[in-house]
Image (cartoon, rainbow, N blue to C red; front, side, top):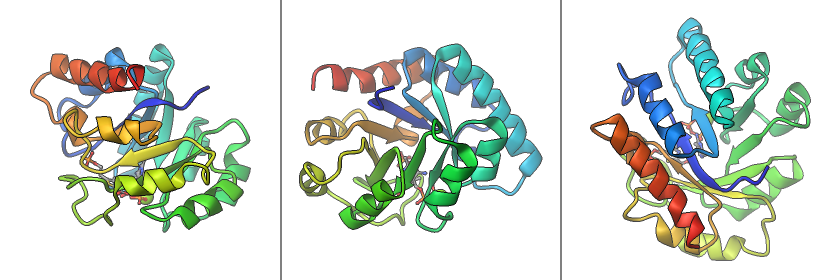
Length: 208
Ligand SMILES: Cc1ncc(COP(=O)(O)OP(=O)(O)O)c(N)n1
Ligand SMILES: Cc1nc(C(=O)O)sc1CCOP(=O)(O)O
Ligand SMILES: [Mg+2]
């Protein structure tokens, strides 16, 4: 499967009261990867929501990724996204198997991406590219890094942080494969608007 297009990420606060409706609206518009990102310790709710997302993803032929939690990913037989403090990639690969998608946060550091590649990641993520409402304190990154990554990084590249329809096109032009978006997708007033945004993010790849 080619990892290219919209990478939708959930946010439990932003999606409170409209969680599945907004996720399904995004899936209607086209989502290459869907990440379940919930930073709480409510394990029962996390399991229930992740199971519901897995069922939705199966209907829309989208791959589900769990943020931070390789054990939950293993329980559901889906992929995982690991940051630099979320545990090593190698045991996660052993736990999840060869066919699972495993992604790694690399901030603005190509050496971290090369290390993730050596350790068997399926994609690397760079960010944050713009001011992020969701994670304002994330280290900053710019498109020069994407130019530098060309030739050095063979894996699909996800970009993240403050991405909207107004600022995403240059990232795709500079080689981003996956646009990882929370607020710029789900910070919308209606399900119809979420679907429209998802379609528009995907259209950026069609014209690149
Ligand atoms: C696609 C993608 N890229 C980066 C992150 C950030 O991961 P991390 O640094 O572990 O921070 P948290 O998301 O866990 O707060 C991500 N989740 N997804
Ligand atoms: C979860 C996350 N990680 C980042 C990083 O730079 O590693 S930025 C970020 C938040 C992404 O949400 P939004 O699209 O609302 O800015
Ligand atoms: Mg993390």
